[in-house]
Image (cartoon, rainbow over the protein chains, first blue to last red):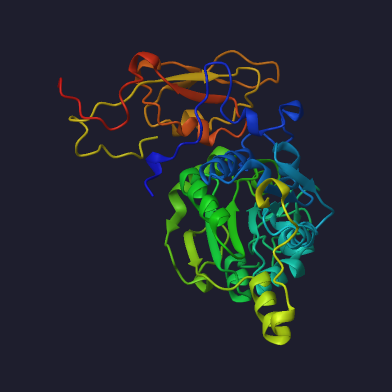
Length: 300
Length: 99
């Protein structure tokens, strides 16, 4: 798709085009100046509008953290869950009503650390979810503790002599667990990110997008990397687009080149497909395939 | 910042013209729009807004080509573009026959 043909809604002279999709009574948001999270939100709204999925069918779930606020700011059906439990909540929603497009927007600490087990099992089951993981390399809201994505030698509050733990390579983690759509972009790649989120929303199966986002107040300041604008310039100069690169080689090292792109896209039976198939095999004609509750507006 | 190359058919294409709208009090002065505008339309204002930031000002409105990159990059939903009404007929990429 040609990025120039993206139609992200036209604003008028008085109103920003995204205002209808945001809870404007909650603005201004709490995110710091030069944080990349607002940009990710714009990309999500643009992608959701581009995908032409009806607004009432999209549900946004998020966990705790800076990124966890996203669900509260979006004017979709949204839910702010407890720490790490965004994916179990979303799984329940999806099974209760498989017609919904359930999106999870949450941070690296929430999804990979506290909710790490849920992430790998949702990927293993190929649950039909869209996960947008905004990675800022630390636990920013609580003051910048080192997390499972903090690159080695980076400074954090809990690692004053530099982090020494080996960080997760998240695309490799979810790919090896069986995710069927995996991509990584930075907050600067707004057009590519919008296209990727749109593809993920329309994809059947577990889709995962990692967004590298600048954290100027904690990660950037502690490591003396400058403002979010300096981090954005770093992403511009040091991100290498390699579509369908092997996720094994996509690990992030401290202040070194970041491989971005769409890494995995494949079709595989989802959790509900597999369940219906196996039950039909075992029970034969007795089994009625599960398609969720009747929707009076659509099924009559 | 000069990161963009000139397209090969730049002299044959007519660029659309856009208007830039900034909500002065909503901006948190991150400077993404100023740094990444491919036509250097925006500049940092000398005034402060109520939050104490320097929002962008539209220094060269005639240069805007309605690419909407500032709108996509702005984390605060404080800047956006509209296609110039006098120019609304010209879709992006139409060939300029007057040149």
